[in-house]
Every structure is written in C-alpha cells, then in structure tokens.
Amino acid sequence: MPSARAIRSSLQVAAKTDVGRVRTNNEDNLAYDLASGVFVVCDGMGGQAFGEIASKVAVEAVIDFFKVKKGSPPPEDQLSTEPLAQAVHAANRAVRAAEREKADHAGMGTTIVALRIEGEGATIAHVGDSRAYLFRQMTLNALTEDHSLVAEQVRRGVLTPEQAERSSWQNVLLRAVGTADEIEVDVRQIAPADGDIFLLASDGLTRTVSDQEIASILGSSNDLNSICDRLIAAANAAGGEDNITCLLVRIVNRPWYHNILSKLFSGGQQWQNSI
Figure 1: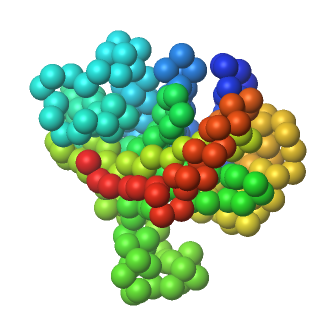
Figure 2: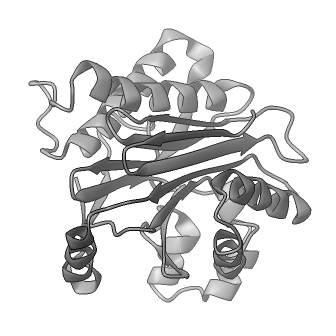
C-alpha cells in the first residue's frame, strides 16, 4: 500500500503499511478520517485471511462510528462514556458479528490502537499490543502498555525487559478485539502541543525496531512520508518477519496557549484507565 498524506487545519498525516519480508498477506489495516480527527491501526489474527478480515472490519467500524454517529454513543451501549472507547466497543461487536457469519472464521480477532484529536485534547484507546507513542521535543514517550503475556510478566517482575525480547511467548495476547462479547479498552487523554508527533504502529515495527531507533528516525526529517518509509525500511532490515504499519500525525500551528495547556496536563496529570 502506498504512503498517504493529508492536511486538515492543524494536523499533518502520513501512513504506510507493508507486508514485510516473510508473510504472504498483510493482516494489518489502517484508516483515518480528518473530518472527525480519528486515526486507527489494527493488526489482525486468526490465520489464513481471517486476521485481515478482522482488522479491516475493526478499522471501518471505528471510522464509521464517528461518520454515522457523529461521536454519539449508541443508546444500548453503556460500557463507556468516552466516544473513542465507544467506537472500539463497536468495533468489537462488528468483529464478533463477522466471526459468526462463517464457522471457519472462529478465533479471529485483532489488536487496535486509535487516536482522536478534538479541540484542545487528544484521546488514545487501545486493546492488544499495537502501540501509540508521542514524540515531543526530540523525546519519544510510550502512551500505551501492551496487553500481552510477556508485557504482564515484565510488569510483575517475572521477566526483565531483555528476557521479554527473547521470549517465545511474545505473540500471546491477553486482550484483543473480537475475542469476547465484552472487552476492556485502555484509554488515555493528553493535551497536544505544537510540533507533537503521534505514532500509531503495529508490533511488526515495534518488536524489531527499538524505541531509540524510532526516536532517531522521527527526529531525522520534517517530511512525514519520508519518516514512514524509513520506519518501514528499518523493520524490514531487521528481518521483516511480520506485517509493518505506521501512522504519523503531527500537530502544527496550534495557538500559543495550547502549548501551555499541554505542559499543565502532562506528566502526572495524564490519566489512563480501562473502560
């Protein structure tokens, strides 16, 4: 899939997905809608082409949620009051429905990481091990925590980060869209500042390219398309064993007071919960 670029008001966007060097099909999908300020990356699972179906259904469900509902949650869904989390729950229902259509679709699912930028705030919602990062003033910060077995073992002190990188259980997810009728969605809100770059990525990038190298590439150019190409190339150079997807969103020309707000609501003022 070729890279894409668009500009809406104070947003610049570039996105690219690549099959990698080993897989024969791409189970990653991405989508964005500048009108609603919504950006989504999904990494499907389920074997054959079913992971590709699950990820496609999920990204379309999130985008359609804001196009059709205009951000208003369906009245029957009481799982969350946060619109982006509502959209992820809608994606879960859509994948479950697609799975029930055919018996051989059983077991399909997808990770999801989504960003919504509206007014002075940004919201991240995710399930699984696709990640969101914030690149601000040449520093890369993770905005999500993987819902995987090895990540949980690291959090509990059972494994060191170095041991986790070598673990044969890296593919085991504790949460994914489409695997249950109800899921937990982690949500985080921050105040963006002028020049911020958000990165949404599948694990085909983050498992093979270190955070340090990602930060170096993000700081190497002002051209988001070029950055996407370099991130994909770095993952392929490291083996390209999985599909690789990156989506970049840069905040530009924000009013000066937005930068003050981002400082006031950074660090300990950021919040994250599961909905």
